[in-house]
Amino acid sequence: AAILGSNMFLNQEFESSAFQEDIESASEIPKRNYQGDPPASASPMGTMEVILPGGIAKFIDEDHSSRRTLTIPVENQPRPSSEDDREAMMKRQLYYGCTEAKVDSKKVRQDIQIIPSRFCHICARTAKTARQIVCSNIRLGTCRKVICEKCFEKFEWNWELAASGSDWTCTHCVGVCPDRAQCSTYCKVNEKLRKRREGIRKVRSVGSPGTSFAIKPPSRLLPRPDQ
Image (tube, rainbow, N blue to C red):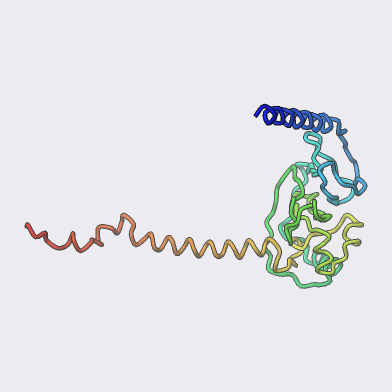
């Protein structure tokens, strides 16, 4: 028992010293600000590169996060939910090889400070498993979606072309999201939930307090034997 107790004490002491070393090493991470896109490299947390539109990236100093945030000036009004038809058609042709858009399901974002999404808009991968590129409309505060390099490969889109410039627009903003994209998935799930809730409301309305007086159990309608 004495040997077991001493081993437990040594393990606790070792874990405590290792934890303290982690804290000290984390505190030594230098704070960095970038006026442009930083070189491709892994962060201390093992997160891969997140490509932002050129000239507007910076690191969050408060927590040394590898996620970069953009400050959108208040005077910059966000553009409408849909881009100019001609511009959107040109981008669809350039980046995705098609001209026709699907049904518009975009919403206008009005964030003043905005951070790129952590999950790919199509496959939900994080930046820990694949490089991501952020929609250029993040500069206007209207979109923060990212698409990973693996999805570019799967759908045969030109990753080098999109990552080389600062005008790449995501599939959602130009209306060409594939069926497996997160917006399509959410629409399907929300439709199922809506129908299910409507059915529950109909069932509850039958037994609601407003109609309960008109539906009595048979024992209440028939006279008792002792009456």
